[in-house]
Every structure is written in structure tokens, then in C-alpha cells.
Image 1 (spheres, rainbow, N blue to C red):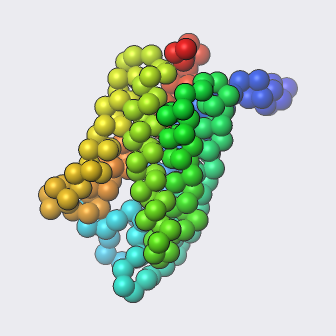
Image 2 (cartoon, rainbow, N blue to C red; image 1 turned 120 degrees about the vertical axis):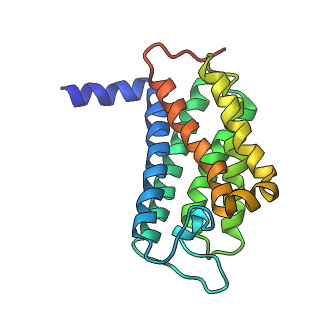
Length: 208
């Protein structure tokens, strides 16, 4: 009876669905990246190696390493689908053009990164860039629909991600390409987990 009740609750409450999937998406991406790094057999550093190298190295000699590639690509695909469903549920609850579009593009970008690994020369960079830009904008835009203090935190998180994106040339000599990319991506995953947890809160309120 408990399982049936939970399923019915999900059907009645899009906010609960959105929060659950968004929380899980952020968690899955972080743990998926860590796990793929563990099984990567060649020299891999968080400073010099890009995250997408785990799915397929995009150097002149394309290399696909398993099981790291399978773990990473499936992680992105699953998380992307979760984010898209979450975006749809949020659209049912709250209709703000900038947030809805950027949040949906964020899910599409994450999904595309998994479907088109780094060895897909044109499409992978496009979907990665979509993920970075739309994710930062979505985090900032979400600050307009959720109460403080997490609204303010979301604004800062989105700003940090976009700052490292637009200033990548400055940070790469200091943090390396991989380190700079992680300062773009990981804040978005933290926002995803935090926003999901906020939506799951029994007293969570969305601004009207």
C-alpha cells in the first residue's frame, strides 16, 4: 500500500517529481564521473584531463576506454532524461520563459553529451556548450522563483559557473583545462541537488 500511495502522490504532485529527479540527476552525474575516473586505465588528472575524455578522448587519436566510457555516457543520458522530465514538471508548475527554456536546454545538453561523446567532433562541443550556458542561466533564473536563502545561493552558483566559462582562458593556465571545466560543471550539479532538495521540502514554496 505504501508503494501505491507513493506512486499516486507522484502523479498528483509535479513538484515532488521534479525535485526527486533533479536531486537524483545531480547525484548520478557526480558519482558517475567519479566512478568513470576510477576505472580509467590511462593517466588521468582532474587538472589536465577534460571530463568528456571519460566518454571518449577527443584528441587526434580518438580513444574509447571501457568501462569508463559506458559509465560516463550512460550517466549523462540518464541524468539528461531526468532533467528533461523535471523541466516539464516545473513548466506545469511555473511558467517563466527564461527559466523554462534554459532549464529544458540544460536537460537537452546533458543528454546530448552522453549521446554524442567527445569523438563526435561537431555535435559534442555544441551540446557541452549548451549544457554550460543554459545550466548557469537556469541556476540564476531559478533564484526568481524560490525563496531565500537558497534563491540567493542559486544566483551565486549560476554566476560562478558562467564566470569560469567566459573567463576560461584566464583560469586554464592556473587550474588546467580539466580543473577549469570542473569549476563550470560541478557548481551546476551542486545547484541541481540543492534545487531538487528544496523542491522536495514539505514547506517549499515557489514565488508567484
